[in-house]
Image (cartoon, rainbow, N blue to C red; front, side, top):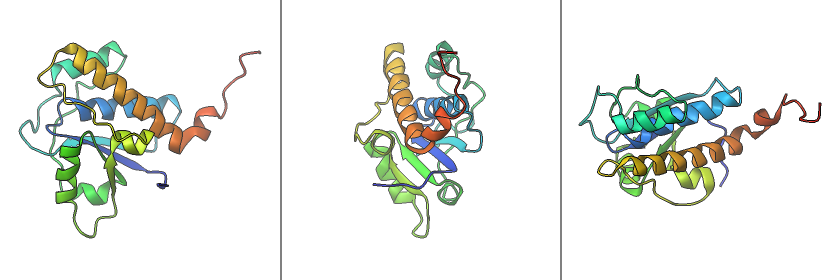
Length: 169
């Protein structure tokens, strides 16, 4: 399945406190490393229980270990306007994909899909680490990083290799 190169990506999980804030930060970091700064990246939750709150401290901690600061992000709920604001809306699991599909307006142009499936062609859910320990958050980070790199390779591979100096110089 071929998808046009997105100019905006929205990551979705249940509360916008664990997985999607990590995905927002990691995808931004992956694109920044490739010199790509013209893609809008955001995250939201299918529920509004944590609206206005910072991401879960364990997500913040795991991100920090990997050189990423997501502490300034604030949780928000998916809105109808997101379906026109974003080209690509990616859910972390099937439950959230159902919630996204139910809320998608009939005339919305946004492409929706499971993050790992769109990025890597693997319909694997990124598990919710909320009730787990720091190791569960680290697993989510690794999964999000792999899918973010795969998504970037899919759309921006040519910009990843442009201008790189030879290691034989």
